[in-house]
Length: 363
Image 1: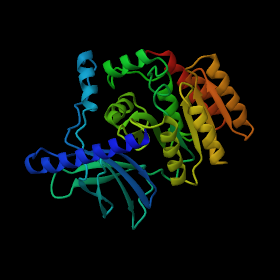
Image 2 (image 1 turned 180 degrees about the horizontal axis):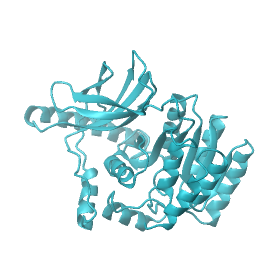
Image 3 (image 1 turned 90 degrees about the vertical axis):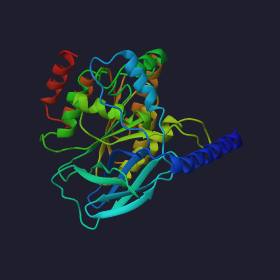
Image 4 (image 1 turned 45 degrees about the vertical axis):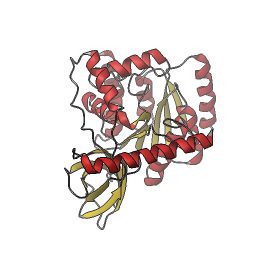
């Protein structure tokens, strides 16, 4: 099987290379750089993007028909990547040229000659195709000195109501909804804002969203966060390409662990909260993170979206994590998470009432 997958991978890469060379001769359509939110420190940043021949889809509307939403979702997966595209990335007078990989992804690291100013969290990088083309702007998150901790959160069935444990529900919501019609869990917007603000109201604690959703859904998820007023943060998704070991996006836990470890290594002085759900393996992934990074995790929140059997497994892991002095909370709703966070000094005491009020209000 591994030999077959390896052969399929080489075949896909060869076909992409041939297609790109042929198109370079006759296809003069615009190359578009889709910038993703990057991350880094005041002296080193990581800029992420993808080079495609597809333009970004127009923003969704509240009254979009279900067929329109389904067509938009299918178009996201009809990506026309540009492998080997050269891109110049610039920030604060520093530039680097990088080459897109076989799926069109761009990952640039810039070491900065002078530290970025610490009076804001977001900084702008410029990305432009080498040889001509429209530039675009990418935003990079650098936690300010005021931040006391960071938050790493899942999205599906943690923030966004997906129904990932019920296949038909998940397919229906994914295909026929859009970023404006899909709903977050009750109180989650108020809770995440409170985490971002911290006890003082001005901490600007950074949020990082690590999801098993494919990069093809990046614009949908970014629009969802923006529309519902959730704090901005980088989204770390996964690729839907071929690899030497499997077809598809790869194992849920391998992908998430890799990004979480990268985040923790990037900010060695910053403690973190981990938020996920019981629908897949977030509790097991987070248990491994607690073991691998002693003293770095302050608390783990798991939204309860599963049945009694899975709950028992989560509670067993909670006892294991508790022995290291860290609370793992299996929470039936967002208010339970907020109450623990307030008691632990992560959010202001008034945040609990705000979460409860938001959960009981319209929508």
